[in-house]
Length: 128
Image (tube, one colour):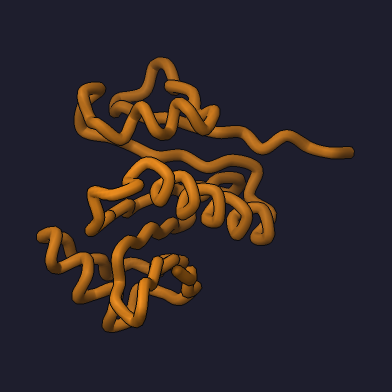
């Protein structure tokens, strides 16, 4: 499997998102997980605020190794966010019952209190 870094205009991303009933038009940094030329997963982020990126999609076509694939995509997305010099990454959910919340909690994302939405955030630790 290989990860391809692209953007929201990539036809593979557009088609993959459409298969989940989603359409993304805003500028995004997109990661596609490819397996033998076929898209099996994707994740993307956009600018949330001056210091934070927001993960906007995480779609997986495979039930095999689902958690492992999600971790790999999220970790790679975090590395790119660091390269862009973001200090944190956020992800929002419609409900605290979303099955993906557990994955983000295992990756050290914390709930943001007093938020109008279900929001998790991961602050990047400075090495300086």
